[in-house]
View (cartoon, rainbow, N blue to C red):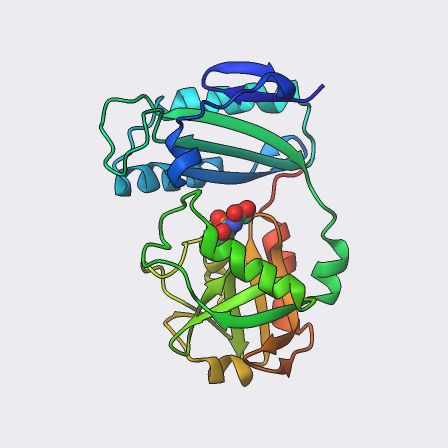
Length: 279
Ligand code: PDD
């Protein structure tokens, strides 16, 4: 049986029930994190908890428990569901109160968590994916990992309707990130990616990859770049907890170009795998 966590309770999934007046349900008023589990071990949990704290602070949400308690609850769930390779999802909504845009600071935040099996990444990591270039229609606080994801959801559907795995977004011609990933390109052995401003989510995979690449003497330039620079890149790839490092082989939509799965991408895939938890 599959279990979930609702507040501090470990429950069979079918026994979970969400209050009708949860602000997460009315307004998407909440935050979340997704952690990958490798060989039963959560990867980069400390980074994810730090980002959770930061998202909560930016939205004036009071976390219901201390970091140690959240870790304890998540580990309980992980063990109960005996997850070996999968995902740990958890979210915190601002709480339950009658619908009103104006929130009070009285309602205790609602904590929920579930686990999910991992998908097999072998094929996409080896052969790459198609992406769809479109307008970044999201708000101006993409740095906050909020469950309010309509802009991301809309462009992801648009990409899938054009047989693309991911939507790559630009704001007035400057590339920001993917709908659920960060974007890197490679030109003359140098890595380029959008800086961690309010216009992107500062991915944990992005942060760790920048560390790994820098340690191995790659130069990493964190600056905004226009669509034309992507067009003339040597290689391009996306990063996230769920896709790790996945090469881009073609861009469609507002730009049409193709890439090979290149040597720098392959090298970084290998170097990134080396920092993942082992058996
Ligand atoms: N998405 N940018 C956006 C908009 C994202 O939603 C994500 C992650 C990332 C990459 O972040 P990280 O490396 O920390 O996973 C970048 C997660 C996986 C999701 O929503 O399922």
